[in-house]
Image (cartoon, rainbow, N blue to C red):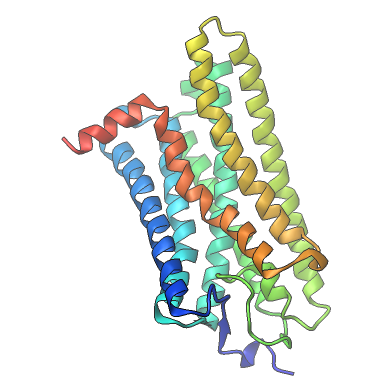
Length: 304
């Protein structure tokens, strides 16, 4: 039986057999990737260059844009290259790196989203203590904790997954290296160790999500008591799309990593993976900018 040490490369999922459809997938992914680069790049540049946006909320938004760029840059470029050059191969080292960064960015992002919901909660319920609770040092520490949690999350998952013996070939039924797909190739009971770590990580992610939902519930209750109808609409139009994308991100990721093998299929796995790895990095810049007048003004200043 071949084990992990004898596998020099993996084969990612092929989107199509015909050359025309391969080029169509390349063009589609290229458009999505460029949209994510443009949207998140504008947010990063606008926040960094405009001193009026040097506040906790925009500092966390800048970090979210960086994480979104890292997340989508981990998965789509390799898929685009494979579609363009009509290949499926990814090296063993490339697969390990891809799995590490996917786990890293996903964990860091859900941690940061939890911090951002806390930021909005403090801004609404404790505005007089906002500066003391969320000073520059506290913000830097919380952002560092989010990035650090991603690293601490990714290391054991990568080590556990790539220490397993493989005897089911090297074909990964996904367009990037994903933990559940690598576990399918294992032929040892040792994979249960990684499954246990995976279940704990998903449970932790659910706790983060529950914290986000509770924060927004409190915010919505406070907003409903606002006398200004325009103010209520502004908060709802900003928070509801954000909560929807967070819910999509968490629910699809949990489904991808916890679904039983009996309901797994290449088409279902592909749709779920796109929903949690591609859609949020593209949609987040629209959500945070379309109702934010300060950010719109900062972007306009970038273009003179």
